[in-house]
Length: 222
Image 1 (tube, one colour):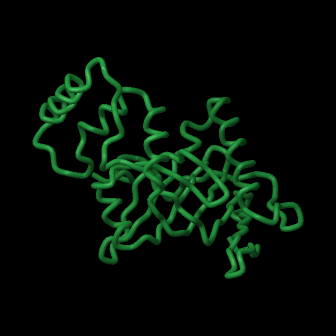
Image 2 (cartoon, rainbow, N blue to C red):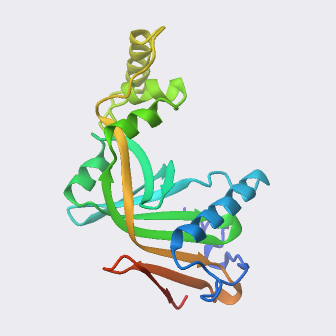
């Protein structure tokens, strides 16, 4: 039985978006200042109980022409781009190795905003991965050793057994960063800011990086 047959009118679902207008004359010349402002406002929405994960971002990769997406967490924002961490043996890492061009998406739906990023991913320095890994909760550190990310697992019990073995291995000792675990920096070539507006007349401003290293701003039709 479909959702419509159960009484959910998907076609009739409506949310009327509203927000301050994005005006070319009022935004910064480069996108990171605007992104930091929006991220701070997303955290404020989180603190009000309106938004769960301000740093959650969807990473889109390509596998033999097939798009694949998943959600990770933004762990550093710098002038060069956006950093996240993962298992280098994972499916996403294999796809990045084959094609480093990726897409990022921040969906801050509670405040009627989205940010879309197009760029290229590259591994960060090993020292950077180790420094971040040392700040993770111990349970997360152990999980990085116990889980062969994206690989088939025979059962939940098998996964739990793997975690218990790792826990025993490092009992009473610091947990080092696994050799197959580390970060990616996504260097953006394009960043689009989307602000919902009434009547679906949304504001869309896209920053594009020129060959000379400067950013141009273009308004897109909603």
